[in-house]
Amino acid sequence: MTGKELRSRAFTLNPHFSYLPEHDRYLMAREKPRHRFNVIGLGVNGQEHIRVTLLEGRATIHGVYDPNPGSIAGAQRAYKQFVPQGELVVYDSLEAACNDPAVDGLIISTPNYTHIDLIRVAAKSGKHILLEKPMATTIPDAYEIMQTAQSYSAIFQVGLQYRYKAIYVEAIHEALVRRALGEVKQISIMEHRIPFLDKVNQWNKFAKYSGGTLVEKCCHYFDLLNLFAQSRATQVFATGSMAVNFREFQYNGEKSDILDNAFVTVRYANGVLGSFNLCMFAPMFYEELVICGDEGRLKAYENQDFLAVARPSTHLEILHGESKPARIGSPGYPTYIEETGHNGGTFYEHVNFIENIEGRQTQTATAAEGFWAVVVGVAAEESVKTGQPVIITELLERHGLSIR
Image (cartoon, rainbow, N blue to C red; front, side, top):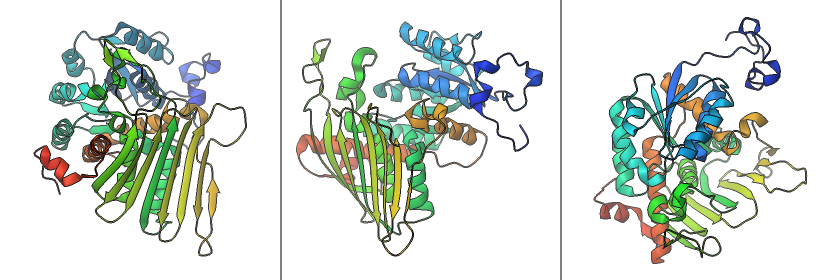
């Protein structure tokens, strides 16, 4: 489209305007998709990727693959919200889904432990790939995927979409672009939330499938810690336990073994200190970021507490004492974008995926950044088990890796 008039997807997709023929659509004109994707893995995240792709508009979903019939049915429903008369192609094998010449991109959102085997197949296609987090559950598998991505001729994007939540976008700009805090010295992130939700085969209740809570869920936050520190972790120390959730849960005769709370501290090569506080038996979704630099302090949070009290769901403040002006705000995206998933993070992940495909520079997480987020998570899980700090170089050397 050309021109500067406000053109909103909220109006373009609004069924109240469905009576308009295409030739009478200007402000509400639908952009013709330029890319076609297949989605592999159709649980909650896979269906979110379908809706967000269609809302973003520059790509469409051609087909899907998942061995679970219920997931296929859910994907069809998600697709028909945007294309009521359309039908998704349903593939009978992973190879067919990866190699269909009708598509130019693959979105992989299968259980964590399957990523390595799927990438070994998908990478042979040469198609653009968006791989959900964490990229793998072990350091060797994450390293192999990183090596594949670094030599890959098409786009290979890792789904660390929390970078695109409004509070983190603003915090990244203030801390790393404007440098409003001066030199970053200390970073603290908190997540307090409800337990893991149900999955097909309940794979997220078992560390051998998920990588453990500090890999599966918390790779997002370790990516953010690494990003704000602008350095690599050298030492990780963590304490945690299985205090409340799933203590009696069994599936196919096997007991759940995942952490539901933890404290993690991370020391970086440049002297920055990071910390992470996790509680997964809190009656809310609450994330908080605090960054202290030598010239100021930033605090941001995102909150959904299920209460009727009217208060902002996000907050960001920058304090400078007497030296500079202070600012307080409430970052956010349009409601229809935030409601698509992860408070708008997935939507802008897709915006950036298209930008990458079309050759424009973005700040998406690289495969190397995905690898280091997994490394910190694995180190934290090990530290909880041993009660000892984990030296990152020693951890990597035990896996036959020497990365400086």
